[in-house]
Image (spheres, one colour):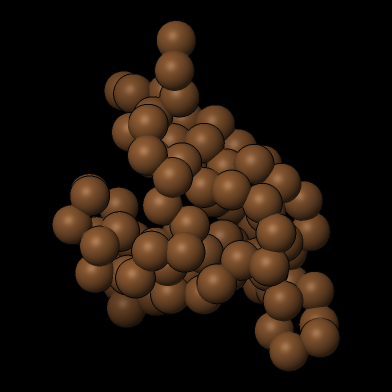
Length: 92
């Protein structure tokens, strides 16, 4: 089965500070996935990288068989990738 979302060893840098190092994940169609971790663990940075808001320094992001890393955010969202932050109490 081909992964619906595949992240291959991405690195994200903020200036020269490495925020993510070799993050990989696979999500098959129909899966439900949650990113859970402490403050500063890289959850938001991972989501920002997936949506194109933060560029990746290394690695690849694939969605529905198409490589999406490096695309502008509007094109990533048009393909169906978006994030819903919980920080404003979206979920009780």
